[in-house]
Image (cartoon, rainbow, N blue to C red):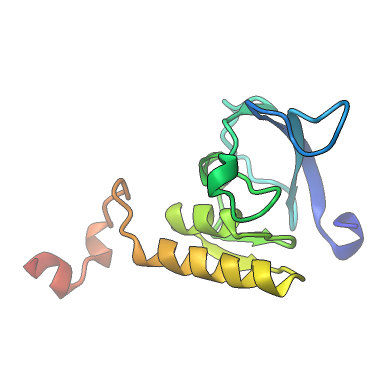
Length: 150
């Protein structure tokens, strides 16, 4: 479906979780992540990452969505890919949006479930309000008079 809309599927990644997923019998300890772009991926990709990413899942008690992903996992993917905009067509509770904001990227997301959409908007707005503690310094030409005065 992504390719039919003009995107190029570049790779499928695997998130190896530290716990079992939902279901019975053979419960998944992994999830697949599709990495796609709207054109040829840049030569600037971080080639130091493997296709299996190991991150612990979101604890059941603190999850806001049944299949919520940890923002740290998504931030590691976003930081490995150059660009300025991140698209999540199935944003659920907004973890990709939170990660995009934390990485200083623009974000576009879609969610069909109104309750999950509201959760995503709340979480992304909170991430926007939170300062980035380890943000790279602004280049000198981007500093404003207010930045210099403080």
